[in-house]
Length: 347
Image 1 (cartoon, rainbow, N blue to C red):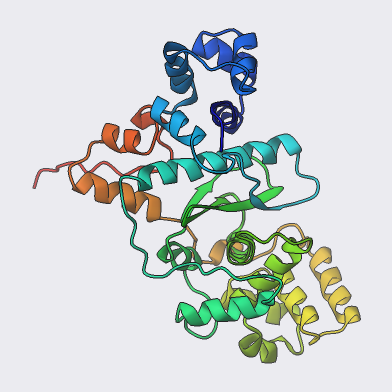
Image 2: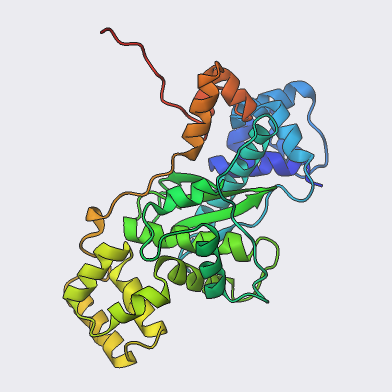
C-alpha cells in the first residue's frame, strides 16, 4: 500500500522543488514537512489542504494516491543516455507517476473505450522481434512503414504526453497504471528520434509490464527496430547502402539514417567495415549529431488526452469540473486534460 508521505514526495519531486520551497509555499515548517514525507506524522486537514494547493492537486487526489495498492512512485521504463543527470530523470519519473495517478483518478469517473489494446508478452518466452510482429498483426497494420505512429499507440488506449524535458539526454518514459498505459516523450527531439523512442517505449509496455529482465533495453530496442522496420520488407532495401540511399530510406521509413545503418548491420546485410565507413561519411558531414531531412518528416503529436477533455466539455463539464475530476487543484494546474476553448463567432 502506498502512503500519504510517498504521494506528497512524488508530487514535490515532479514540480522540481525542494522541501524548503514546498514548506514555505504551504505555510508549514520544513521539519514538519519532513515528518509528513517520511510518514512519521500525518498532516492536519488544514495543513493537508495547503500542501495540496501548493502542489497543484486536490486533497482527494493525495488521499486517493496514498490508498492504492503497491507503490505510487514506481520506477519508469526510460530511454535515456548514460550521461543523463539523476536529478533530471528522477524528476521526469516523478512527473510520469503523477500523470499515472491523474489518469487513474479520472478513469474512476470516465470510461475509455479503445479500438485496440496493447498486449503484454512474457519476454522470457517471447522474442522481442516476434512480439513486434504479433502486435502489428493484432492491430492489423499495413505492411511497410508505420504512418502516424502516435495515433496507432493512442488508438490502443495509451495516453501520450509530449513535453519539453529541458534536456536532450532523456527521450521518453512509460509505465502502466491499472489497465491504462501512459507514455511521456521529449517533444524537442527530431521526429525520427521521437518515433524510435515511441517504438522503444511501446516495446517496454508490451514486454516489461511485470517481468523485468537484465536485457530490457536491448529487448525494447529490438522490438522498436522490427516494429518500425519489419525485416521481411526492409531487408531487400538495405543492400548496397549509400548516403543517397539512406536519404531515401529515411524519408520512406521515418527513422534516422543511423537507425537504418544499425538495422542493416543487425540483419547482417552489411559488414562491420561497411557500417564503419557509413558512420565516417556521416561524421564528415556533421550528420552524427544533426541529420538532414528530420524536419521534413510528418510530426508525431498526441491528441488523446485533449480529445478526452473535449468530449467531457461537450457533455457540459466546465474546466473546473474537468480539473477536479482529474485531481488538479484548478484548471490552470491541469497540464494533462486540456481542451481548446470553443468561442462563438459572429457570422
